[in-house]
Image (cartoon, one colour):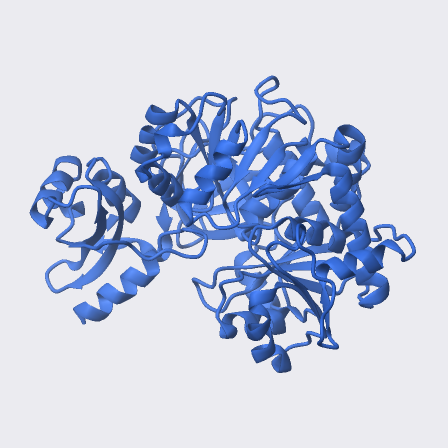
Length: 540
């Protein structure tokens, strides 16, 4: 069932008059004008400056680069102000954005460029050699190149015929005729590629309606009086090429007039803490592994958290014990969310309207339906696990040029099969117990890795952990736990003994492997799949 709301998303969209994402920047300029919109390091863009630069970039894309509404522009950048200008400039020109991870290998980048049919790319100067390696196998005709410090030390000249410097593009654009957004709510705005954990990476087709609906759904969880539009400072360490940061930290921040602090490299904790100290932060978006790393930093307790209202966690599961530790040290609660690339992404959130329920994420955002089904597609009763299905205005149009893959995950009546195993209780709260393929079958009993990890993380000496299933002659599968430690004196026996205190017998890890660090994706998500495949290979 949907969470309570005064107005439906469709009604709010109709009342706003917005027909595409670019409209909200125009509205923000009317409401917030010269207030700061985005900062990165020591550089800041006001809402008015952002609109002016985005408009110039959009004119360049349309008239000089020759891109037409519906053409795809790839953006391959870390969190920089140029990224935000690129997003709104492309949308103003009627283009479709293809968010591309700047840490991709040539193979990964080539697949995304080729599959999307992108005609141009806005790219960091250091990545141009990668583009050149794969360009012959793509449709890329134009490279728009920027450097990290372009706004302070602009470079205007470029020797390659098919390359244009970003700052030169802005200068050209300012002298070109004006453009008006030509895309409607149901036109494509974004090709957001999935992580490829279940096969080849696929482009989720997200429309202007999908993204705008999700923005309205996301802000609907804010209780009146909890924040002041136009006067909050949000820190965004998650990369904008990730759908959660794209929608929540970029698009929704413009909608609400929040001043968003972009963190270019969240792995550089020293610089990140300097950036945080530079502003009186009131909101922070992160993920579990970032909270762990920050709390382990020697300067963490010197940060002024007195104005921090709450922290949003999304993009990876939040460990309950880590949330407790964060609140104890900062005084700010962590509000967890759940979503997918295919849902723009927010589906479920912990909000000020709903009481906290330990072990549960929260309730569905407005105009969103949830249900769980068994392997035969039959709906499971409340309180019993099943595959989670979602229906709402934020659900993607489908996978780009993959109708068969689309039909596999979206039913004829519009339900998206998430591939996640969840439990919905009588009050409508969701607990995510795991992905179906990660479930461990021990002597016929289902073991969900999150249960094991939550129990292990109750030990203060454990920094991070991942539970996987490995083949076992006696049990079919056994639980193996990978850990990194705060306390180097901990050994395998002590960790297993600790788990035994909190888990029933068949869930207790049979083995523990201690490592200095655990593998993570470029957005900081622990890579269970990598460890699972490694463990199974060793066992066989």
